[in-house]
Image 1 (cartoon, rainbow, N blue to C red):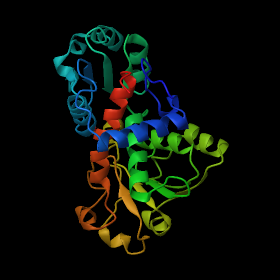
Image 2 (image 1 turned 90 degrees about the horizontal axis):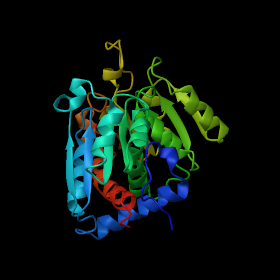
Image 3 (image 1 turned 120 degrees about the vertical axis):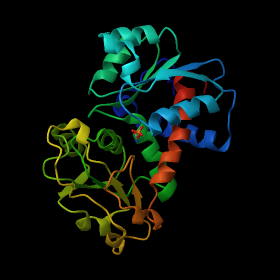
Image 4 (image 1 turned 135 degrees about the vertical axis):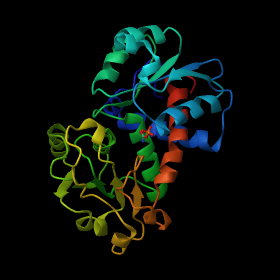
Length: 301
Ligand code: CP
């Protein structure tokens, strides 16, 4: 049995492999067996200082489907941050109003700061170019759903590896599994050195590539990401990681294309009509995984 109540989830590394597997199993149970009263009486505070569609609304939907309530905000403009209140002060106060906080901020490290200030569990819903652990849990859930396993897969990860927080958390989670990784990115957006070193230290086989075409024939999963222009000074960067349906001719039959979304122009809409597209199913899985996280971190499961 694992205990999540009163803990924070700031980095995917806060969880052991066994805990990750336990969360994925709980998500599967909640998908099959709705529990409309499981979190009745509990309040989630959605504290989103940066834009979001999927993470914020799936957290909200998850809490409502479990019978709980939601308070919060979707931008900092309507909060006292505009008057100069510190994140720590705001979170300390909000944690007196709610039972659990989901927080998204534009600054790497601020989710940890929020967790230290909060008297209630804090779940990192994305901290700048840092991490996005709940996205990784739904990514793992989706990989297992569409490939029936995680071990022994070849996984290509493409796009903005430098600022893409979903990539960082996914790489750290995949340290627990026996996978072969292929990385594709523009030269100026490489995987951070600390993650490269961790992959090496843990004996994960990986290689770097300049084009998607080099890795598509080898991959079981192609995990595409958006260039995080909002985190860069220079925004006229050419994206060399764009996928069109015509590039999938050499793909394995079982290849599934994932993307945390939102996409901009890195996956042509023509890919949506191929059997390889799986990113909308992936987004749907966020609901089940976040239901499991809420129930577990509130001590209801
Ligand atoms: N995947 C993800 O984090 O999407 P949102 O930015 O819409 O929440």
